[in-house]
Length: 418
Image (cartoon, rainbow, N blue to C red; front, side, top):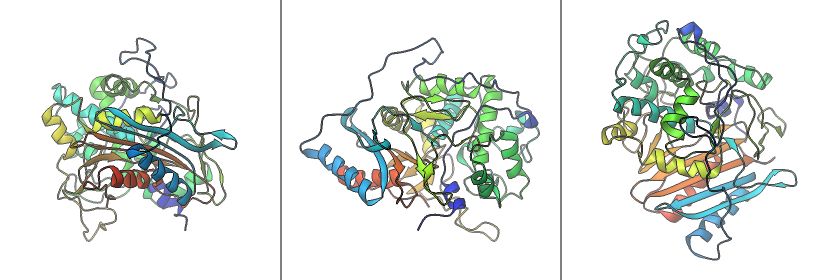
């Protein structure tokens, strides 16, 4: 059974066009001028990186096991394409692409796809780097930078990054999903999105529970721009993408995707249709509108999941900024919204902590991806999928990552979140 439009939207990931939060006191960012793939952290120009290509077909061992998992899952889940890269101790175990991008066009490892809420893990890492540098404190109220935000004097940067602000998720509000599906090419502004959330009564007092809200990250991106005086796409390039060598990952101010493109298809509107260039502007902070490839996704899993760019204290905050123990049903907030945050499964600072894994798994209009890192084994799993006509929808890439983990690290399963 295909998920409802609203439930599908709830799982979609982040990518937005560059626009200003003028209504919240944030200066307009420059439209256009996206940070392109293949630039250095200081914008100095193109930088060489190893091409993202497949490994030779394995004949045995763990690489063959992973390939067989991917092949079976592609057929079982009705997927049009599956792209996988796995590394262990920094060594490439397998990189492969199965299926098609479009009819007659094979999927390739170097094809670009939307990385969705992977970019939220970069927002969290960038915030924590600024904390490490003494630029800002996690518990400073956001009213300092966003003076017109309701309850901004009681909402901190920590609460935005950890999603404990109590703001209603605009994606779940009545009619929002129907509006998006009625015109999937619409350009949404951050002002419109935040207004949808702030018009609703909050779920709880800031910092007292946990619930996912896209509005948190729209606002966090705006605050980071105001704190640093730097456009968010440039800030993420300087603080995260450049230092991690993610030269195939780029922000865009439009729904365009750099070539070569992994095309996406979905039946979310009741018929199977191409959704590659549906507008992602409703999903997160302007400047975090990103596309990537499978090689960067694997590198991202390692860089973010290991805390490579953070101090030990910053890494601890990444893994638990105070969310453990929050959530749970109340008279106002059901446990499907205020999901209990436990030691085993909880939200960190823009990442998911799933047992021993640090993860993110976006979903956007026929695209699904998963980045997962197991620090104790130095094991990274990156998966990207697109739906075929018979696909059930949902987080198929995460499902495949879970199955790969079960083969390579059976003592460390990846659970579902919530």
